[in-house]
Every structure is written in structure tokens, then in C-alpha cells.
Amino acid sequence: MFKKGAKLYSYEVVREAGKDVLYVNFLGAPFVPSIADSASVMARTIDMLIEAPNVSRIVFVQQRNYCYDLHQVSLLSEIAQLYVYLIRQEKVLEAKKLATGKCTKYLPQRYDTMRYLVLVLLKQDPIGCYVEAKRILREEKIFARKLPENEKACENAYIRLLEKIVSLLEATKLIKKVKNKLEGYRLGSRELYSEIFRPEILPNFTFTSQKQKNLLILKE
Image (cartoon, rainbow, N blue to C red; front, side, top):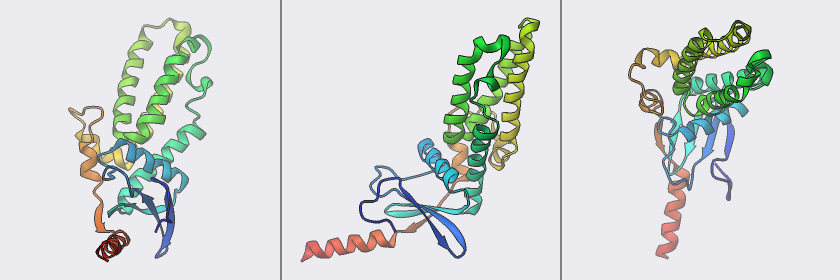
């Protein structure tokens, strides 16, 4: 599958039976790759889906192949599309979107918050992103009540942006699956993902064949 010397985490998209399959090289990784267990693996996968949006199946290649089917891939593809929309269409990291007029003094804090939500949490932990966005929205609404009249208009614009992000997340298939299971949820928990992302584990015949060849050479 991968050429000799292929870098760890490199990937190839292969056309199979009329479908695009994303093969990711985890040979040599010091861990078993898992979308459910690892925030970094989930984020890498979403980055790949941003670059290759038409993928129907994902295969993590290691001593075994970890295969994610169309349904599981579609859940992450939707998150990848949302990321692209928020960055490129909504431009959520632009200053004029976060704070204008009397609210410019809040820009650094809002910029850090939005970077955390969209650049980090959305890709590493979309469920956590949803929970955090809702929490931040509640806090901003409380904060808005205490503001002087000349700051309320720009504060309300920021609140509407947060409301849109929460609404867009709620519309995703992933959040719909877990929305009624979030009572007692702790940020960073991967338990809900383990119920959703369950790869089919298959032998890696290329790896097995190479291993057998190496054993024969040693015997000789």
C-alpha cells in the first residue's frame, strides 16, 4: 500500500469499487490508532477529511487494518465541513466578527475563546466543543445583563455568533446521537465516542507477508 519510507501519518486516497478509500499510515506508531480513544487521531482524521472530502471509508494501516465504514466517516465528514464553513464563510476568527465598537476591549479574550472552540475542540472533541459552546453562551448572556446600554448591541452580536455555532453543532448527526446522553458529561471524556466509532479490525496481509519473509531470512 505505502511506498518504502512513507512518513508516519501520511495518507493515500484509493479508488475501490467506485468509492474513495482513505488509507492512513500508522506503521511504526507507538500506539494502536483509534478515533474513539484519541483526540489527536480524531483531529488528524478530520484534517484529512478537510483535504479529501469525498471519502467513503477510512483504513488505519498498522499490524492490523482498522476500518471505519461510511456511516462513521460521514459523522466526521460533517464536522470537517462545519469547520471549513466556520473558518471560510462565517470567518469566526476575524476581529470584526468578534468585537466592534465599544466591545473591542473584549477582543483578545473572545479571540482566544473562538480559537479554542474551533481550532482545537471542534476537531479533537466535537462533543466537548458543543458542551463548551453552550456553557460560554450561557455565561455571555449573564454578562450581557450587566453591561451599559452602549455595549449591549456589540455584545448581542457576539451572542448571536455563539448561538449560531451551537445551532450548527446541534444539527450535526454526531451531536444528535449524543444530545440526550450529556448529563454528567465531563470535558475530555471519550466514553461516548467509544459507543459510536467502532472499526472493523482486519488482518494486514502485506504486513503479515513481510513478517513471514523476514522470519524465513532469519532461519536461512
